[in-house]
Length: 213
Image (cartoon, rainbow, N blue to C red; front, side, top):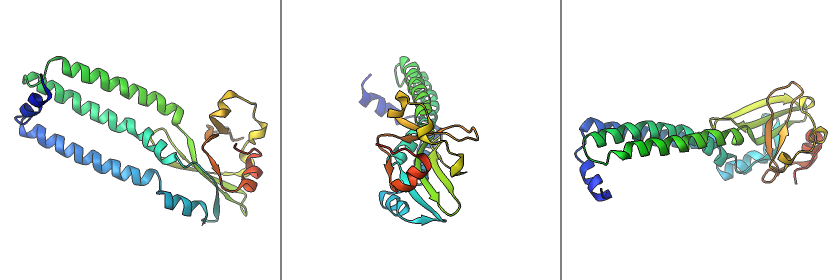
């Protein structure tokens, strides 16, 4: 069945299906725009934030690609929603004879495969550090990172609670990222080894004792 024929037949879908589809698209579009505003700042905002003092904290490290990484982690949510909406719609179209019967199963298999890929990949891209701030007076570090669902999280710890990178055993994974470990035993965060930018090397080395190359 040709694409033109399928599109022409979709015009005759029940009104409630059309309204549901339109409202869903509008909702997803607004959610994506809202998410993109929350996940990161514009380049100008990043530069201003990196070079200014925020609540006594000064940025000493940034990961320019954190906004894209956050959007990728968030993508699995929208893809899963789109799959749950598109598969039933395909079954409705197939039951009305508007599309071939094998289309619904194909949509379900492709959608679930991509969703599985995104969920597994997000394990790797989870907990990447976007910014590190240091308050020299309080000797406190504030770390902004992205979680599994693409949201920005912040952790405030004492500099003395951070395990120096120079004390960690060398591993091949350090060529991809450097782990931020805490003596308190919380889950480690990840600093990009290749694309991370050290803004203040003196203060960064004071905390981590290791320079990102």
